[in-house]
Image (tube, rainbow, N blue to C red; front, side, top):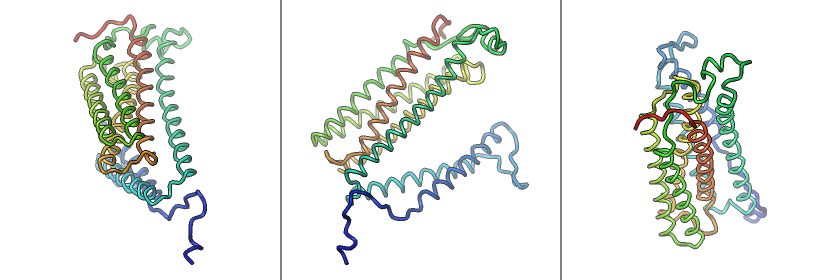
Length: 292
């Protein structure tokens, strides 16, 4: 009887799981709650069937559900890996899945770059009078002071490039079964990620323009803010890998969780280089620099 249930193939037939339906519920609540939260912030009302939902509480309930699903689902995935379910074929498909996820993220950034270049390259098109109205017929728009790319932006560029080096060091140490090097490399990468986010938060707080001031501010904050959000997610991703490394979860032959985090972090690095050159340098060329 035992032989009848013995696994004789490379595929993983997963057990019934509650996480997909809970994740769908959480996604619905956080989306619905996000609308209610925005109505609340703008001083409006959000009634459904006569019930007032305007407020922040529904959004945070949905967020809590999503975080719980992430913890539970990934914990199950780690458990399956330790049980030997991640065979050669399964590992290959996990890599395909991560590649497709990063490709979808690339398209998100393409949208923000598209919006930025569309507004900047055609700011003086006479056929589009609204753009001339919003930009003054030039880019950056008249009256906009831009951030000095050779101040905080170049500082953050160096930070991210260094973090790409340290995460590669950690990966190399893992492949050579150097647990100490793995932990040191990951620790430095997480600290550099936190430093990057802190510098960007300071930059936002002292920016000479706001999101609502102009099309320049809107496209700037959407593109760089979306990247900053990815840095935050990547830092958490690597922090989880650091905890798992300290626990001894990774081996030179089985460490896809770390590998996926490293791919994601390198993707964040590359996107930042495009942002730095296109938005901070090219996009602010010739404009007056903000003081300080």
